[in-house]
Length: 354
Picture (tube, rainbow, N blue to C red):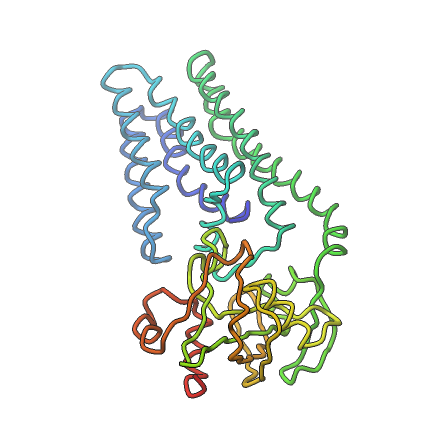
C-alpha cells in the first residue's frame, strides 16, 4: 500500500472523531458521541454499498470513540476519550514496525487488496521499507505527544495535536519521501534491469526499466515459461515463496521469467531455468506464444515444454519447493486458489499438449 492509499484508508476512520470534536464544542459530549456513532454507521453502510467491503478500521475507530467517550461521561473525566487518538495511532505504529523491521510485511500484504498482481523489484521493496521506517519514528513521536497532551495540555492543544498535526506530519513525510525518491529515481533506473518492448508478433519496438513495465502502463514485454514433464506426463510445479507480494504460497509453472533487453530467447530460458529450479543441460521446444494481461502489466509469453527433469535442484529463495502433479491432481484443484491464475489459464490452453 503506498502512502496515498494509506491516507485514503485512514481518513474515513477519523471523520467520527472530527465530528465529535466539533459537536462537543457546541452541544456537549453526549451529542458529540451520538453524532460520531451515527456518522460511523453511515460510513460503514456507504463503503459497503459503494466498494462492496466491510471497513474494519472505521468500525474500530467509531467503537473505540464511543467506548472511551462513554467512560468519560460516566466518570466525568474526559482523559479516557482524549487517549483514543493515541491508541489508534499506536496500532498504526505497530503495523509499520512489524512491516519495516521484520520479514512479515503487513503493509505489503495489504497492498494486494488495492493493487492486484502488483510486482515490486528489490529496489522498490527497499524504498518501501525505508519509507515505513521513517513513518514509524515520526508517528511514534506524534503518539507520545498525543498522550502527553491528554494529561498535561489544554483541550485546544490536544485537539490540534491529535487531529490537525497528524495530517500535517503525514504531509511532511509524504513530501520528504517524494523528494528523496525523485532524487534517487535516475540512479535506480540506471541500475535496474531493462526489458524489451515488443508488439504481439514479438518485434522489438524499444526498451523500458522493469518497474515501468509493472506499473499499469501495459507496456508489452516478453517472458518465458517452461513446463517440465516426466515420462508419465506429470507436470513439475514450483511453489511460490510465502513472502512474495504477488500470489504468495501458490503453485505455479515450473519456470517463468523476463527476457532482458539484448538477451536471446534461448539464453533467457536457460538462465531462468537455472535461477528458479536449478535445471541445466536440457532441451525444450516452443509450443505456444500468447498475450497475458493483468491490471499491472502486459506480457508476451513464450511457452516451452521439456521432458528433461533429472537435473532439477531448487536453490532459489523465491521458490519454496516443487513437485510433480498428475493431470488428475491438477484438475481436482483447479479453481480452489491452489494455483496461480496464470498457470490455470495456461494449463487450460495447453491441455491437449499435456
